[in-house]
Amino acid sequence: GESVGLHLPTLSVQEGDNSIINCAYSNSASDYFIWYKQESGKGPQFIIDIRSNMDKRQGQRVTVLLNKTVKHLSLQIAATQPGDSAVYFCAENTGGFKTIFGAGTRLFVKA
Amino acid sequence: KAGVTQTPRYLIKTRGQQVTLSCSPISGHRSVSWYQQTPGQGLQFLFEYFSETQRNKGNFPGRFSGRQFSNSRSEMNVSTLELGDSALYLCASSLEGRGGTNEKLFFGSGTQLSVL
Image (cartoon, rainbow over all chains, first blue to last red; front, side, top):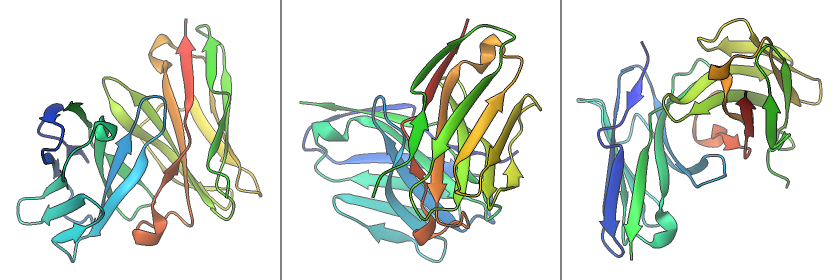
């Protein structure tokens, strides 16, 4: 069935290092991909998105890379800070008024 | 502008009971989606509403239902509660739900449902 999955369930990084969170998606027809961040006790919050006609998009300290050939998505966080500790979800919009979420990766930032 | 508001924040029910959860979207947003979040299954899509019409539905039993009102507020109902229904229920709104840069989802903080 439809799925968006993650390679690593947990990731631990040192404060100041760069973080890379990976994601695989299965629907080659998906044309819009999003990364969300969920902190404890809150709903997911939008971080950055990318359309399928792009392979890279940069935000403030975050970059999303899209490789359609292997159906792979990644989120890079530069100079990771303690406030970045959260669960990160990749998601894809299938165009059918539905956004599908991956399983999530928990990011721990060590001070 | 106020964010997505979900009520109640916490709910405790017993098996066999039914429950109604409420969601008020961001002003101007007409699409409302519901998700069930559990540690084992992650975020699972329940359904999406737009202009009081359900446009898409996930793979949940008929005990899960929803509706949307003319002011875009939405409710979801779970009847004959089971232990496995214990979860965080999240509501998200967007302008028109078509997906795309201007259609990102904005989530509420959720309703934590515990079924005993």
